[in-house]
Image (cartoon, rainbow, N blue to C red):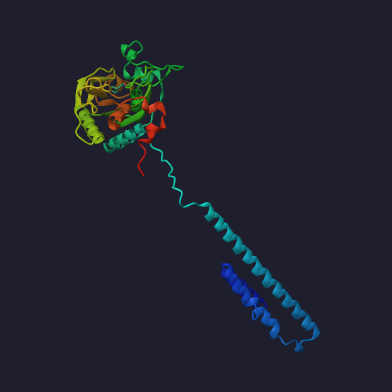
Length: 340
Ligand code: DAH
């Protein structure tokens, strides 16, 4: 009888539908079923009354076992069938699908990542740097002493304890020299702050990307070479630039590298004014800055630049108003999301 039980369980384990279970029931409990036959075909006349009693008992157990196992499996199959039927009723395949909206990187982040890649290709390291700076790093260490008129050029958010919200990424120059020594080739992109009134081309919060290269024999030729590589990679075509002398206390000589305005082609428009966009102020690192960084200016020289990352993003994507970047209007950012 145990063999029959095992056989039954294995038959039930493969029965997946009500119909298959009914077949199992017939196989065991039907008119000619295995269990039914067992009772019919046994010759009770040869049994003692004790044996009859035992056998009858076992036979009843087998019948009960068979019936209960079949009922159990039948119920399981029934409920799983109704579950999937219920789920199917909930799905309406005629309803149009809804696609989730994909977020996007901020356009400035996109340009920043692109710049990082270009500079890394030229062997520069990419450094992180603090937005809250010491007055020393932001001004004094880069040759802007307390009474220097250049401090007027930068309306500064002053904090307590001689700390400032950095007004430019140049604040990280001397830290970098002190920390890494020379030779060094690094860029440090990041957010800067100035207490300015806001208009289509001025913001109180904007991004720059500072670059610094110091080694033996670095000259203006290296500076121009790096700037040219950079701009042709960013704009993927020849761009018109002009180099003008510029004054910054931390470089000597200093230059202004301007980019021909891409909106108006150089004739003048509200974004650029006179047809040129001031993009990359740069120059050779002032000997005093090298000294503050612990570098011997008799042996080493270098160049630095402070690229307007926000401005570059405006040029790159044709954004005419700087205020969009920080306004937090999702419709603006969505335009930069990848197309699915
Ligand atoms: N720090 C300057 C500013 O924000 C920009 C600048 C000018 C950076 C010349 C430089 C440089 O590295 O060489 O106005």
